[in-house]
Length: 161
Image 1 (cartoon, rainbow, N blue to C red):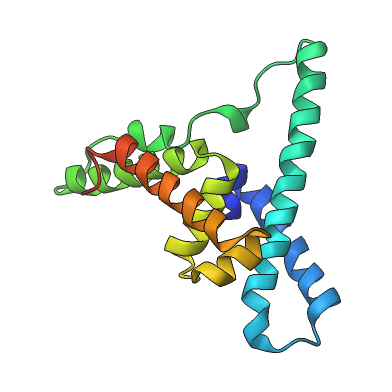
Image 2: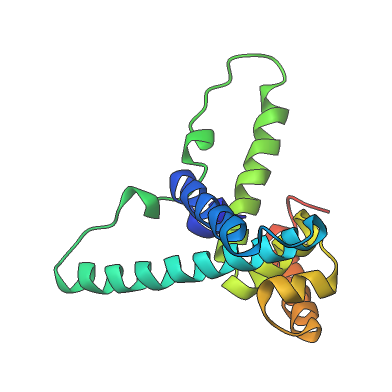
């Protein structure tokens, strides 16, 4: 989830580690059943903070005439340049390419839609736990999740049923 939000594995690992430390520090005395929604709430907060910092850095980069970083390159370029070296590679590449397009489509979603989709579909959280983790109402979770699903279906109709 953090990697999709940041587009960088190292940054994502830093965010997850920071969120885990925050969970243990502030909520270590809570029951284990309460930890997943609390963890995701902390993680989402860290992700939003990262977006804010990145926005400020990008403003300064534009003012100072900065260039695009390597992080701005599209994900999956390496997969696109692989050579056919063994039988059956075409099918494997098609699957990897579809996953790459899914990841790009997820990154293109607005943050709240991305959060709702990842928490509900990938993490398997119910609506109330997702609402708690996102710090919003259950109705908002349903709206964001529905919009994310429709947008992903539109963008990925060729790759996913």
